[in-house]
Image (cartoon, rainbow over all chains, first blue to last red; front, top):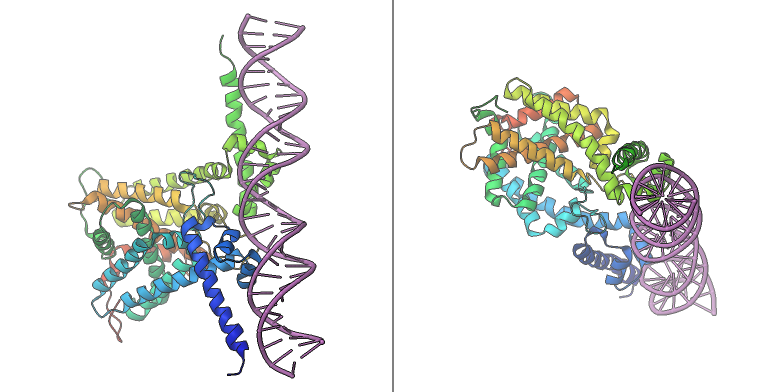
Length: 215
Length: 215
DNA sequence: AGACTGCTGTTACCGCAAGTAACGTACTGC
DNA sequence: GCAGTACGTTACTTGCGGTAACAGCAGTCT
């Protein structure tokens, strides 16, 4: 008893409060997009702005905390797929599929993580794209690079090569996924196998079409 | 009679004025980053805000016009590399190198095209990334997809496959380039050949390292 | 000539969002 | 009772995007 409620009545509630605020922010951001104002978020949480600032410093801090939650969840899922016990090709496909399934299941979250800005009024296609994707994409790239370095024999200069590939593959997955999510030109399975084919060197193998030099 | 010099004395100067404004905006944006205010741009051009708005509608319009100029230049360079008369591998490498050389030569322009936001105050690493990259990346992806579809024999469902690859390859190039530009972990030539190796299926060929299942 | 049009440009304002200061309040432990 | 601390508020400042409203200056129409 006793005690301390300081650590129990104040510190723990503080953590809990923070989570509540993040959940409220999540709701607003997922509803209004990244243009959500601090006032709106505070209102959704049933409080006022300065409290948000006391907890998160500034808007960037709030968004970063928000992004971290989702990012961590996605990264865990990817790590699991990456660690599955099967051959390399299957593992690649399952990782791609896990990523694509995630962004397909929660496009709102995805758009927040990748395209945070979204010009104010309806601007048809306001030329922005992934804004804070950086942390997420960078982390995914680094982690994948590490996995490659640990497991694939790349000969000399393997570290740099592995990191290059990590970032490259993540970028490929991201760009293709972003485009696919917008246009839905095919099923997820087709996308996965096309990308895996690309990584498996089908570009090098394919014949030229008649009519000119091949790409 | 009729008409007027309106088309010659007013429309032509209007076009010219527009270019002057864009050049001023370019200077400011390249100096202050994308956080440049309309007031600042207007001041640099020696005029005031409303004129900018009359010419470009809103800030998005200005930025779009600005982005289009640079985007078009980059796309021309890439098309040239893509059309060079040599074998596929060389063409891929030369296209990658053209892109990387461009972003290396004008990192300011690159950052504007890709990461337009850049939180206000010094925010170490404010979690944003490519913001309006969309138009540029999408256009590059589409164009590359078209080139692939025109030249590479992909069998059935070639169209979709080609577009997937187009966006995927562009995304790979973009992500790897973005990371490389920030960390400079190796020379441009190394990066180019590593990425080309990746596209050439070395991931599928490489042996596992001892100690666990290969990636 | 003088009214009309259409461009150039201005100053002065609105609205709104980020961020802050200052103040009040409850609960804790001493 | 008193200090400390987290919680909460109202009210403010600053700065930016965007918009009137107004003014000078061609050239054109009658």
